[in-house]
Structure formats: structure tokens, C-alpha cells
Image (cartoon, rainbow, N blue to C red; front, side, top):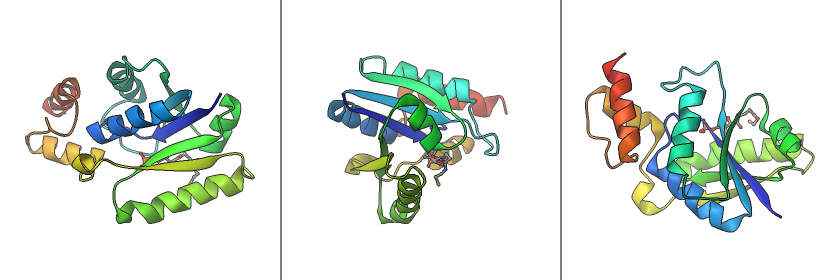
Length: 161
Ligand code: PNS
């Protein structure tokens, strides 16, 4: 059985993330989408809220589960007995950052955690959680960036800030 983890901040999950999740779920027997609980990052959504959004969005995908982690990804993956990390690549600008994370993880884990990259579908290549938040902060339309229920949650957040 081949298990993979898709780690990230997912603040919030975008249609680009969901596209990677759906495609990766077809490649592996199980996929754990795991939200990094990074206390240092000033997140819009709490880890619990991000996990709930991901659970709702992946309800129809039986081999996908959602979790959270803190600390190093390699330690989390070792505990879960997972040897593949999945990451999306949108553009060349992502590459350097992703290459560094992938190589660090492989080195630190002594080869136990490798990374598989999925190139983001072109229609989502422009998307990022940061731009979703910036658009929403200025009352812009994010309906093409995130599922409808997420757009509502993001709008609510900015109303109450
Ligand atoms: O969605 P993001 O913020 O680009 O995801 C980055 C993430 C969560 C994959 C990365 O920051 C990570 O794995 N952090 C956990 C700490 C860790 O393992 N660091 C070593 C690799 S540099």
C-alpha cells in the first residue's frame, strides 16, 4: 500500500490545492492532507478551521484523510509510516523553494521521505492562499479561487476582523 502526505498551510484551501488533492488521491492508496500548525505564522483561519474546510471539501474522496501536524514533516511522516510527500508546483518561481524543502527532507530523513511534485492545472496556476486573502480583504470576488462555502467563510472572517 502506497501512502502519501500532502502538507501545507492551507490558509485557506484553494481550488488549486483541491485539484492537487484530487489528482494525488488517484495516484496513491491513501493521501493524508496535513495542515501545518505553525504558531509563528499569522493565519486567517485556525488549524481546526482549516482542517474542517479540507474535510468538507474532500468528503467525496474515500482515500483522503485530513490531519494537522507541528514540528518537522519528516518526524510526522515517520510516525505515520509515510514515505512520500506531495507538493504542487505552479510556476518556476515555486521551484527553488520547493526544491530546497524536498532536498532538506530527503537529506534529514536519510532518504525515508521523498517528494512527488504535481504541476498545477493551468487554470489554477495563478492561485495562492495569499492572493485569495488579499482580494477578499479589499472586498474582491474570490468565487473563482475557492469553493463557494470557503468563499463565504473567508468573507465572514474579514467582516469580523
Ligand atoms: O503551504 P506552505 O506554507 O507552502 O507549506 C510549507 C510546508 C508546510 C510544506 C513546510 O513549511 C513544512 O513542511 N514545514 C514543516 C517544518 C519542516 O519540516 N521543515 C523542514 C523542511 S524546510
